[in-house]
Image (cartoon, rainbow over the protein chains, first blue to last red):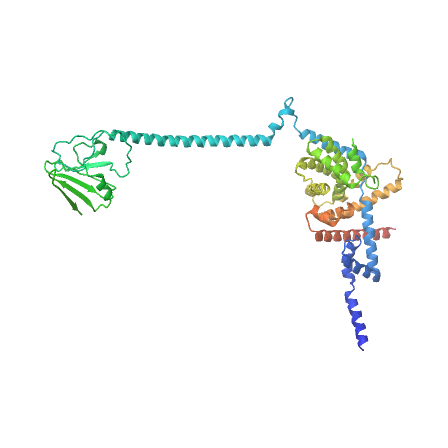
Length: 273
Length: 220
């Protein structure tokens, strides 16, 4: 019983393993040219041994392939090929540019189109660089001129008399001017550009340039200005006989320092808020 | 005027067994290098060495003698034009086949535009023009000549039943004898696709042959 079952199972598995005609028909066109893998080729060969119809099909495939190979050989005479070559060469000669007459062997490589492009681009870059350098140098020259002008302005300012440190009444005799120092460069960062001179007689303040300051006008010391962090400073100096009034405007617009000096020895600084 | 290199390149192993394949490759590489440098004589030798392949492929693809001639001329002009771009590490014949197929594709497209709908393989005068090309001075007798011409015309018509891709695959695989991988490389396709195209083409050609045989039997 067991043996019979085994035999039946082996027959069935062999049947399933065996290739059917539909599957073989797909593989025969490749099988005739040996384009299948070994395993598949063996399966097709086994099927062809068993199936007469598929064997005939394979034979027909092989015959049609041989027929194709025999019939697809062109038989063109030699002058056919000569004509093709002659036409091609004449067209090539037409398209080829004639060489420059004498200087061609020496200078021809120099004037190739690609090299010309490279040379032109290099020249263009050099030109652009020169222009940029020119512009940059002009800009720095202008800056130097401005600085030179500033120096000139400072030099003009230096001969003016030095600011008296202690406020003195205006009617007092002008002290001797400080000895002349060599002109030095001063930065204008913390120095007021404009001095507002406010006199009690004339209520309208007169804006004068600091460079035009008169020697008798007394100003607040620079140290105080720095300590109060004054950015915009307005100094009003009273030109009255008794009182010298000095106003300092701090960075805060609400804070103004007013300094009144009556007598040369008696200075009463007050601070208004 | 073919030079010695071109002559040796034209010889097959059967004709010139002493010439090794490597030697022929070297000769071809030499010709290519010289042609790339602008040597027209070397380019002519290169044409002589490859003209049979180019003309045969063009004729099989287009099925017409005059079209094949025009296509071959165009192929060689393109080869001359783009020879600088050719990578010597690449297979020159593969590159040449690729150009030939491209030219044939363009020619077929132009022709389709000109006579849309008409079967160009059955155009009048096609067989007559082909027959004119055969030299009667050969030793073949007239009957054999006629039979060969008929067979050639039938094969041309059979190839015309294929699609362009199938035709290219079967021409390169069965008629030019390239491997499936080489054909795939030339057609920029996968070997599986080429195998499928070749299988389909063979089935169609067999069908064409069966019909012919049946028709012949009926006439007989």
